[in-house]
Length: 378
Image 1: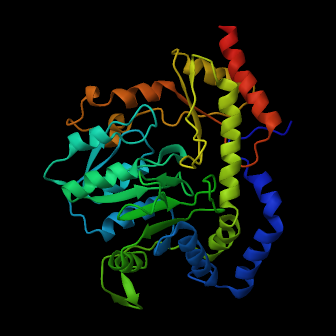
Image 2 (image 1 turned 180 degrees about the horizontal axis):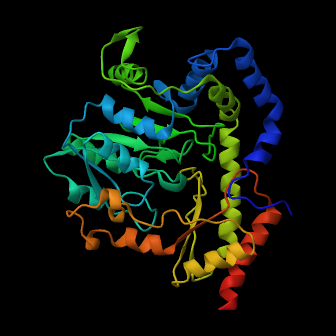
Image 3 (image 1 turned 90 degrees about the vertical axis):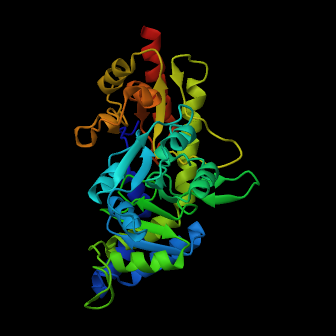
């Protein structure tokens, strides 16, 4: 059996090595390292794939979120609602811009932001909602957009973990996660479903005026060289990363199908075990692209399972061990523990197993048998 890894980027690279190497070599030979043809090519290809009018590449996913908020003109003190159970980057950029983070609980069923919690958190100071498509599962964007419209709020999609996932609407139409809100942001960190070989990110929008503003922000506020029309930052996707992404974007649907195949194998093995809650997998849509395959362990022995798997050299991780409302940087007297029952439960129950495009049946069998062995030993 091949060595188990949480993400096997080497095996993935080996399969696409000639195409990736040739694409990178083209950049090296033309020396167009910043805003070169590869970046513009990737931008156009991603716009077509997502069905969105504007893709603005940038340096990383955290920048993408920050620039999206800057582009909307949010002002210090404006309240921005987001999920308590997610990676810190989501709330980090809110705080950096001197906006007011409003953390709310998530839904136990899908681990995405709770619709009821959003409604309860809205005040006259609320200006935006940031849903996170956590672990690769699309949030309920139809309902979130309805809430936002009722209260005249912006929606900024944190799509760092779910590129390629579809949001399915009640009329049967599908739209790609990240393209439904007023603006979306994603990351191309190497372990993402669409990952480069360094840092990278992008912002999506169908709003022409907002796209124009954001294009200036990512480049020091310039539309014409040395003319600074808005306050900007330096955040650009470099051409070598775009060269990698050009090759991998053509394979993204296949990559996501491989992740879904692995997820189905996992879940089939765990079916019937009362101590394990596996993620839901739809048969007729692709609303979940499994950036992570995350279980809930309900018998209170998650940490012992973690130790058991690590002793067998099976990589696994806890995403996320501490709620954002309990992090030192984001402590706030407004938050009460009783407002976060689901998040506080999840941080005690979740464990993520290896998930990547190169998982094979032998590896999945060993992992699932090792998990089930733990419960049989009790």
